[in-house]
Length: 506
Image 1 (cartoon, helix red, strand yellow):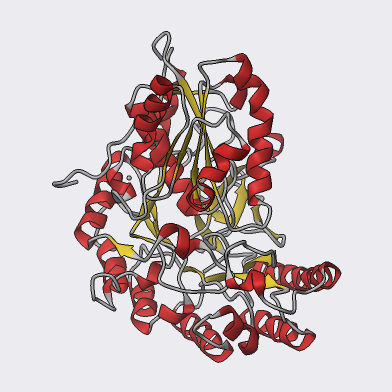
Image 2 (image 1 turned 135 degrees about the horizontal axis):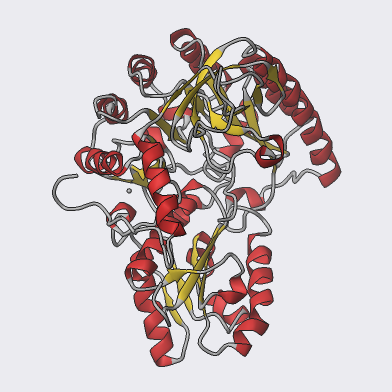
């Protein structure tokens, strides 16, 4: 870190798309000469809020954070505050009116303008509000500061063509725009060359990929192409839409070894009547049919979902249909949400808004049922040998328990002992994040598994090497993580995000 360099902090709210965008914002700022600040926002010269607009209290959350920074900014004239993301795209000038100490407001389509807008605001001593109405550059062409040495998001599309009545995302991120397959695969190959061994294909409606380029089987072909990339250990994707989930995707998942046996597919409601009101283009039978075909082709697949409780007009009978689907599907995990109005969506104006007490009671019943199912499904894993990819920061109690944590192929979280049989004398280096460890599962809880015995095998990987090299670089005086460039034109990419359903909306 050079003396006098301006520091930055990016604070992220929302889904994986926002997390991925924040990596780009960080990369842009570092490419412009900024260095990352400690987590205390008051210490940073530039604080960027990457916002989400899909919760009823999203604006309260933002303005609360802005209010807490106001005194510090008044005491430090050179400090700058920027607001980007979905709420910025939606509210535009409102942000500067309510928080006049904000310096920059930018939207979801012009992330690449952030350094320029900050400099312009500094020079002109006035707020800069710039909201593009369409995508200026695909995010993956921008510099990035990846948070993980071994796992990475790869955006394959942006925007969404659906018109769900509870969702404001299409209005903020626009119609779906797909990247060309060659660009996606080139990015993945570049990531693998950097040491990444797990990628997650990312899109607002990831399995609709190809609609923008006129190829209905483009997504399954992309999965198969990922299977041919040497050194790529694991491929995941989120979030698919049941409307676009076709049998060729199931076949590609089953036949491509590095595509993991995991599927997150939002349900939202089990009631056909509510699904119609949500403007979801599938019904209960179609959803359960997809689940049945996935289980037939991939018996060990772990399924997860998103569910909204208390959508306007939901009756007790409608809610019982949701419980029915949960019992039939036997999800390993469900991200459950109490319906909240999203300003600007048709559902916010619908009759039949459900009283809070009723929504809370239904929500608690759903959570109790899913906890029971999650625990029962996890108990089926006891006695199995699983290969885990060692994770960083997944186990909150790892230090106290002297354990490490990793993700099974189906994405279940497993805590394990790092020592192997015959080891544990302190002379053998423990596995590193990104390495692969084989364990035997001895205990199951609703939300995690435990391997209490010694590890059965450790495979040290290039991802572990990359993690170790990053740690060594950061321990050096002035050490900083390098910024990867965005996708080249030729050849060979925080606060906790929302759950895996991409805002819980799709």
